[in-house]
Structures are given as structure tokens and as C-alpha cells.
Length: 308
Ligand code: GLN
Image 1 (cartoon, rainbow, N blue to C red):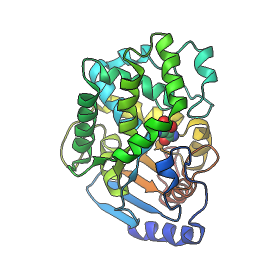
Image 2 (image 1 turned 60 degrees about the horizontal axis):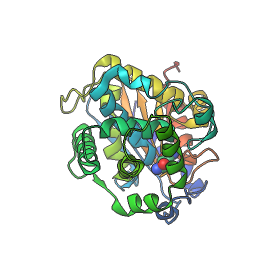
Image 3 (image 1 turned 90 degrees about the vertical axis):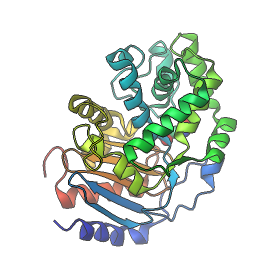
Image 4 (image 1 turned 180 degrees about the vertical axis):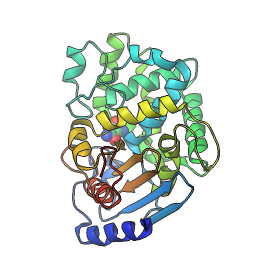
């Protein structure tokens, strides 16, 4: 299959629609982003790379970082992590508070904000916030095999100043003992992980370990066991798009994780890792055109995990 031709056809089809959706304006720094942008990259497990549009432009990966932080936390505490966070789809928005009270401070899954904040709190154990941020950045550079990945401090600061809902979620969990560090410390790490700036190409490469049974086939770096890679993919499929996860599975059929910066990391197990970016979001906070692009990709390649 000519994957470059597939990407080119997707780009051509979406070009007239660039600008659809709404940028995430609740984070002031992200509100400034031009929504008329689109990039997509595919890194295959046999070592090839294909890209189209602004695939080399860095963007704020936001919640996609939750996949990497989850990987790091599982490496530290293993299955014990599931005492702090569940593994079920939430059916509520990414920053919902109401479910957290009903379920006594244990978030539904590691990809909604509350769950990700609890996971970050686990990684923070035994470290100063600055060290945990450094450890996280080193880890992402390692999985991406790219030392040029950076954190955008302006985005981190912007969210620190305005992330009142996240403070509410974290304080709530602290009241139940599910946040064990000062809330400012845990959120300091969380806002910096979300502010990671990466391009579609970097993201596609960073996701290769999930597409290739836990080991990056380009570098030979073993990141997680095959079993853990499979399980992270399962969580991404069920929970990676918040209350849009069912629709994403229905339309695309691939494990995926979105972020409010407009990026999506998708995994075709055994085949490829895909990074796509377009800043305009749909009603539930997932990239509008990024989702359509992945739907077209799945249709044209037959890569859905449910068959073609
Ligand atoms: N940093 C964002 C927040 O906490 C991440 C949300 C997202 O990407 N869905 O609100």
C-alpha cells in the first residue's frame, strides 16, 4: 500500500475544511493558536516514516502526555497503581468533578484529568517537582529517541494561572488521601507534562513502542513488556477520548489519545503509530479534523483493530 498517497489524499480532502472546530480557549496560551493548521505522520513498525502538511511543527500535546506518564507510573509501582485510579470509561467530560465525589476520590481512569493527576502524584513520590518534571522529559525523549523535545514554559505558566478546575479536582482527591503531595506540587508537574511541545513526527515515533509490543523497533529500546503495551492500548481505546471514546472507536477503531492542543496519538498494533494535529476541537474537546483524518486513514488502510 502506498501510505504516502493515502496521507496525500487525506490532506487534499481535508484542506477545504481547515479551521473547523474551536481552539481550547480555557487555556489562554492555546487560545492564540491558528486553527487553520493540519499535520499528520505515520511511523511504521518496519522503520518507515510518512508525513503530510505541518507534520514538523511543534504543538502542545496536552493530554496525550497522560499516556507517557501512565507508562512511567506503571514502571514504578506496577499493578499497585490501580488502587489509585480505575480502568473504566468515564462517560463524562475530561474535567468532570461530579463523578469524583460519587466515587470517593478514585477517578474512573488514568486519562481523564483527575486520573492523570493521581498518576502524576504517584510519579512525584520521593522527588521534588522539578526532578519529576526532568524525569518525565527524559523519558519522553527516550521513547521518541529525540533530544529536541521540550516543554513550553509559557503554556505551563498559562495553565498554572488559570487551571482552577484542576485545582478543584486535585484538592478533592487530597481530601480523600488520593493525592499525597501538596496540590501545587502535583499540579506543577501535571501542567508541565501537558505543556510538552512535540510535532506529529516526534509523536508518531514516540508511540512506536505501543505499536510494537513494548519495544521501539527503530532503536531496540525496550520500554514496557508486550503485555503492558497491550493493556495501555486497551485503555486508550476505551478511555482515550473521554466521553467521545465510544464514537472514536466506532469511527476509527484504533487505540488513541487526544489532547486539547488538537493532537491525537493513534496506534495500529503491529503496524504503525500515527500522530495527527489540527487545533480546532469538537464539542467534547477532541481534534475535529484529526478525528476525521484518522477515520479516513482507518477506512483506506483497513487498520481498525476490528478488521477492515
Ligand atoms: N492540560 C489540560 C487540562 O488539564 C489537558 C486536557 C486535555 O488535553 N484534554 O485541562
